[in-house]
Length: 366
Image (tube, rainbow, N blue to C red; front, top):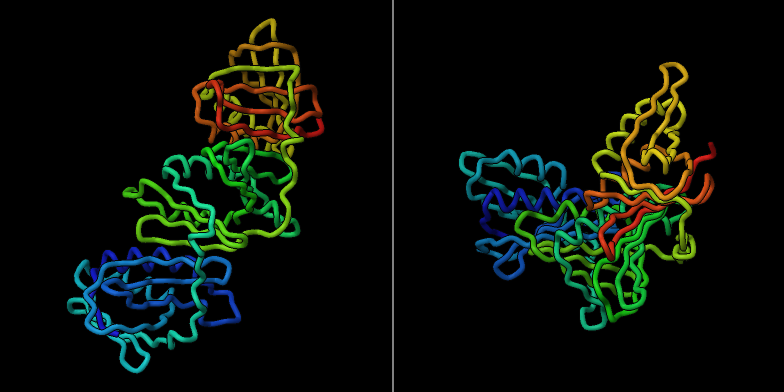
């Protein structure tokens, strides 16, 4: 293999795929990245057997070929080269690199030992093209409620599902639940995408990206953004029937300014650290005030208030971090906060008509 590429393009590609290369593995080849010519392009790829990511960059190919190189060393080395043309040449399974006055040899491994990169049959897959901004927002709104508990794998990802002609994303960790309506769909889909995969896709989105193409088959999902591809295994199992957990109505509703709600939640959270983040929210219809009270036995206590349109008198105790995270991803200047008593789940959503997103938090025992 012999070719020339620009340092900027090579650095971008290696940095992107290098994150997937696994350093904690019994298969040393998985800590490498694959370099392989493909027509007039260079394919840069890595896999940990759960996720495979590839990047294509333009190259001047003098001789086709392939090699695998340690990801960490290659990434750190290329990132420190000057922004000039980089010459890559394979001689006896070693990669000779030349850039300006810099010249190095990195010991490589034969590309035949690298795992075969997964593929998806496009003709038999469910396909979506989604605007990047909508995708980024939908993922940020749902990924925060995925679980880290590996004993319940189905909760460690975001559930993509069709319902009444719409594609929904949902996630829950057992303490909170989020759902986002994304696009119309004529396909029937039920797939759980690992959180790690979605985080990797977000990292690969650049300012030049406008749309993201997504393909599902029975066991895999593929994301394509410009010249980057990420293919991941889906999580097996059945996601909980979360729709039956959504309250049909609420006894108490408060509508208030989002910035005010965030401020009083953060301030109250400062005094709730000793009590596991426990804060108590009280609505007062007569004074049109939502107040949040928190106590730190060693430091003191706090009551913060904000004006609100309130339908009833009520009280509920929540985790301050859960509430702050929910408020941070709701795209609205006004928030509708609803609950029924102290033990039923509360709902947070935008006051915009036909809102696409809602967030549920289970109360704490007060």
